[in-house]
Length: 292
Image (cartoon, rainbow, N blue to C red; front, side, top):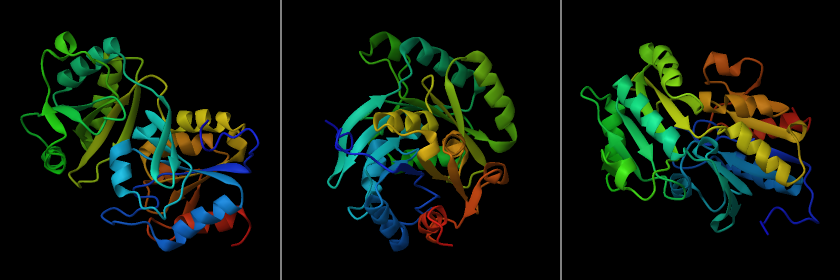
């Protein structure tokens, strides 16, 4: 039995927060004390506490601190879902993968675009990835290889012929922002049926990331799946975010907050909260419970 699915236990609601840029500032090593205290308070109030991140399970676990309390983790923008314990990752619930036929079409489409790509293994090993470097790679491309030198491998042309594991969890393409809309449209046309999500590059290199997942993959869908396990609905959900890959999560939850430094098109229709590192989660908790 999963830690939070005891049939004798019920929850007041489900509280979901993005991680980087929402409660953890870019470049910082920790979540502020006020937000950690708010997560502890949510347990006392009977809420299921969830981090929904674009990070892989491995990379979130590296950044996690024991006093950052949560009950479940949605990782890789919804490709994976697992319980979380005081000691770290708990039992996996489910994963959504790119099956071989769709993976082949997606890699062919990525190559056609000409921006190179990163292709990630299945969870829990999806911090390991293959890459194909373009001729004029953006700064973020090489920076990512520098950050993960032992986890990255050149894409093998015979991958789908000789590998025993031809499914992928994710494909990511770094695209100059000015070219993104056309590239996204072209990719969707060449490889239909996949979940395609944009996110902001953390490297300040003028790129957006086109992230490709298996059908139906998103933070919002994973949140819905998780809520169903504990007999909760979107009407009993609060979601916090700051970037494009949070859009469907924010739309799914009945109550939603977006950081004040998020892109304008993401903030529309949601309550604006303080930026990461300024106690935004604690501020949102006070708003939800009527303590302005």
